[in-house]
Image (cartoon, rainbow, N blue to C red):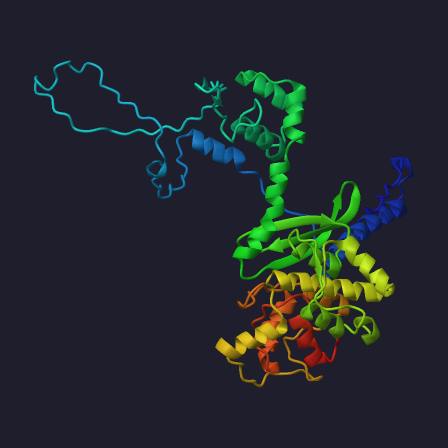
Length: 438
């Protein structure tokens, strides 16, 4: 904030006595001294003084360019042959003007073509009339031609895909899209356009539902994650399962282990009580008297049957229901071909010898320097970083659980390859290292 400047009142010359004039000169000298001291204080405090602005050179550069000055132009980079990679759909030969009709007879020689490639876009209405032949045989039998399988209604597959692409990907509103189709010559009403955008999309949903199962069949490992998301105006969660080959997403209202195991079943709804399921329940401290109530070998078609079976045997506690449900879901995955800890150990003994223990640097508490510490909640998320078959875990810096497995597993006498279900291999490592059962 600038200080207010003080102005001396005007003193008539008749009243300026020698004493008054001496006082005025003294005030002026003191004011100059004060300004010098203020400048010195700013310099000692390294405060910014009044900026020194240089005059603009825009006008000078403009005048120089107008007088004939040359500007340096950037050198063009090497050009790649783009036209050589294009698929040519049409070829037109152009004869030079003035070429005689009998050019060869008059001594003209053909020297080849000078190609010039032009990319063009053709968007136009294309109406197809299918005329289904109908025949009647001598015995009265009637035969009639069938429409192609791609024909579903009076709107072609290309028209449907174009409308969906413009609406969902290009964000074109329905009124503008309707006007655009009319300009192209497509006879379609506003209701029919809305019908194309909102109804009869079962094939798309079926393809999306089959994506996870197909991806698991061709993949040797998967990566998973979940994050908060809003769906239908409500807060929920979006779960991702995939790898470099596929990506699958699903919106749910939960991010629990039960929810993840249900999604990993890829459309299967059964709950299975097998050896792996009972082993999972025992490892998660399900009481023995409760565990004996569940018979190995049973299978339940859906969640309703499983809930009724739990109620029938007297399992009603929320914790016991959760552990039993997780075990039954694990049994369902095992029945689909997922591997267990014992299967991994058998595979290691056959073709992959156990690695030797190597000394590693440790901190003051005896933990490896690069072994992160997980809370129970973080451990629960780390357990879902699993594999489907016997291939090494891919190194991903963002996944601390996999870093811990690949780096610390060998030091504990465990190989860093884990084709396991959620909880089995990770919990074994934590139990051996931190005596933590999860």
